Image 1: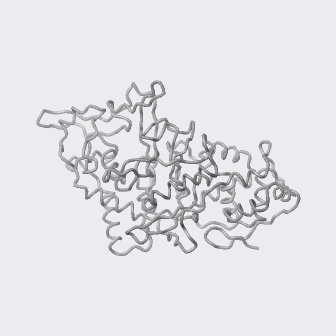
Image 2: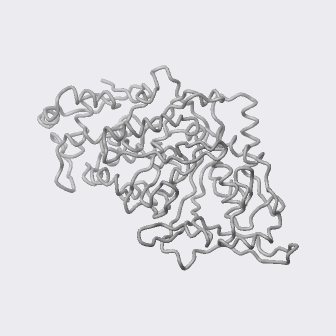
Image 3: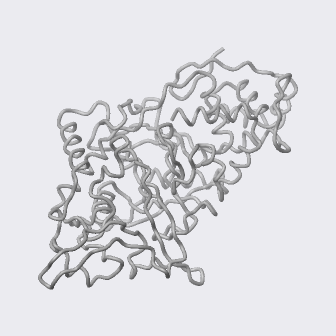
Length: 467
């Protein structure tokens, strides 16, 4: 007997005990509801019943020990409120994104687009200097400095944000250089008004909030950019109707070039709506290079008077470098998935759904119309809804626009197997540490993980390592 996972590939079904435990689970819900859950899953009904039993109560002669009193088996089915990509407009004929090499271009692009990708990659790796407008304060001299393991990935570098909370209100301390701290500076320079030594910023004494943020991989972001705003808004509505306790919200932000209100999707707070704006923001805030979108230098430690000594006070970039960086990210392939062993990882994916993880880490999304054929109307699997969720004490305490102190974007899980640090601040060194640190709207899924059968816990971890 064979079941099918999402790609349609048959996978051997596990041996299933269909005795009293399965009957108890089946009797706990009406048949139509169970069948609807099975239709969304990747396994047969028998396999799903076996997982439901093993997750929390154990079955037959293979009963596994559990750490705490098990909830009713119906909790397994009710925890999965994930949205299927067909509900977002995909059909059985919508093509899926083809595999590409890690750090390489999207599969199937033509020679012209490949040339744009390569030119963008060259700019991405180029080291900027003072003549290019670097600084006066900055974080790195190249995009690749934070994103080169491999190219487009992450080095695990963290950056510091800070602010102050007084009477429940967050102050980014902009007059002290906040909320992003630039930890490099160009040093001593001479100018018409004299000479000055620019020094790296520090967290001011007034700050009572300090947070680290991990630089994130850039793989597949062109696909995310190509998802229509309406799709994210629809996804948020579906989550709210199915599972209000875990539902995400869209962060509505301003697109600088048009002035339009857009759905933010990039950054730890979903504070950026497009890759082009993300590029210009990175050039300014990470390297101190101004452009048409971001023409004003960051004032070192908030002291704008120091900009009188800026060695390149004019606009640093005409926008060409920003455009090339955008091209590179737009055409960068999503991370390939590891070859998954039949059975263990397939069961792990069903466990992932049953625990409620897929409620926020939406497995599949679909793009809209794009001038790049390889991005147009394609199904891809980021395992994120790119919405804000209240993470309680796991939040970073920083307020950015409409994104509150405890709200964070659902981190995409694709490429997880190639990572070595996890969560927004890199505190977790293993996937399991990241799971057990979840809080807020993810607390219930974390508790289900604690109660889970140890064998299926390993299946879940095997699945996550395959992403």
